[in-house]
Each structure stands twice: as C-alpha cells, then as structure tokens.
Image 1 (cartoon, rainbow, N blue to C red):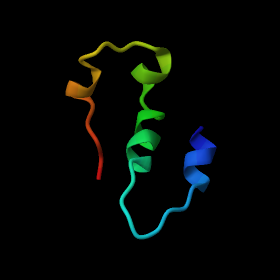
Image 2: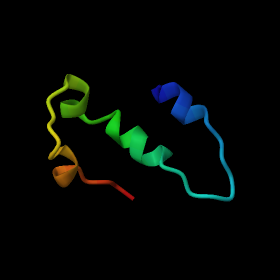
Image 3: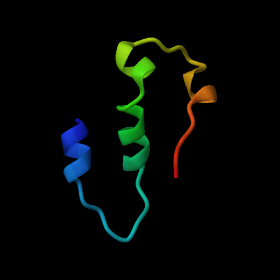
Image 4: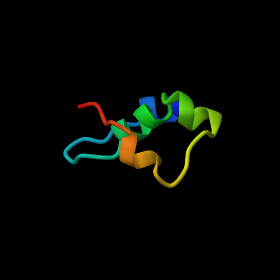
Length: 46
C-alpha cells in the first residue's frame, strides 16, 4: 500500500494520500495498538 500511494499521481485536486502515507508510518497504527480515540492524538504533518 505504501508503494501504491507513493506511485499514485493526481493533479489539480487535493487528496487524502498524504494522510494515508503518514498513517502507514505510524508505529502504533502498524502494531495495531489503537482505539477509536486514535485520531484525537494523531498529528498530521503539513
């Protein structure tokens, strides 16, 4: 999935691809160590 997101090209509109790329780099997410409150603490980098 990380490779697919890196290779995806969309021009002219904003997408959620950067969010998903950051999510797939999050250690707790990858370990499955999250709850429904996960997004309250997840910081999206610009």
